[in-house]
Amino acid sequence: MPFAEINKIKIYYEERGDGFPLVLIAGFGVDHMGWSAVIDNLAENYRVILFDNRGAGQSDAPDQSYDIAAMADDIAALLDHLQIEQAYICGHSMGTSVAQQFALKYPQKSKKMILCNALPKLNTLSRMVFDIIDRMIVDGSSRDILCDFFVPWCYSDDTLANLDNHPQVKERNAYAKTTLYPQSVVGFKRQLEAVKSFDITKEAKNITVPTLLIAGDKDFLTPIEGSHYLADHIPQAELHIIKDTGHMSFVEKPKEFCEIVDTFLAEKE
Image (cartoon, rainbow, N blue to C red; front, side, top):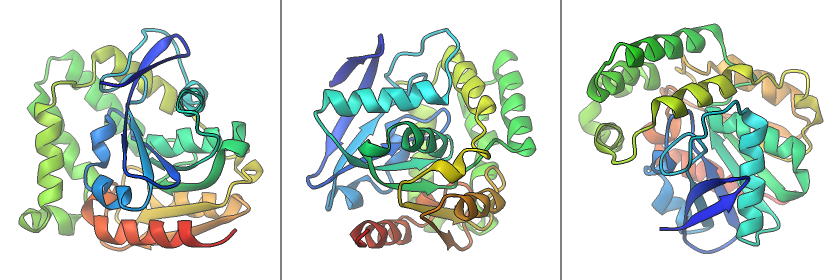
């Protein structure tokens, strides 16, 4: 299994496909397989770099304070480890925070950026949801209950009412419950600390990387207003809304997501 020893920790990573490098940054609490609904499709056109953020999956979860900037530094170091000078950077949810920070700090390494269900800072509802999950963990709730609690916050009502038509959603939920590498309590608390402290509202205007924002119109955790804000403040940004999807828009409509991504990345700068 490939690990990179970077920034005094071990980062687990995988590569799929050939072509120009495309780094996929998972969201809060999720390992690299959070992208399972779109990995195969994207790997047909790109050299897809998958990895586990610090605090999740098989990567180390140091019990020390770290922030989104440190997670962006991990990506820069991973690219150096792989001898990749520049890549497309794509993040989901908390991963969009990492991507934005990466674009600010390492613009020369970011050819284009894709922000899926993005946030300029964590909203009040999301803070409350994650704080409740934190309490559930402390109280000893099972992984099954934690996963089931989170599902309604992640998907649109249309998806939840028609789960038989969304096998990729069922597959993702089953993986979350059975993975051999569930997020540790330390990883959860440290990642939560990082995402809570993130606020790019004043710096978004300084992002120079061409950016595509993809949002779900039924997203509660990272409401569409956040994507509108970033689209209005990042100089070279465009917004695409996937209708009838919630926080997991790329899982609910993976084909549409990949088509949007391919079109954006094919455009000349």
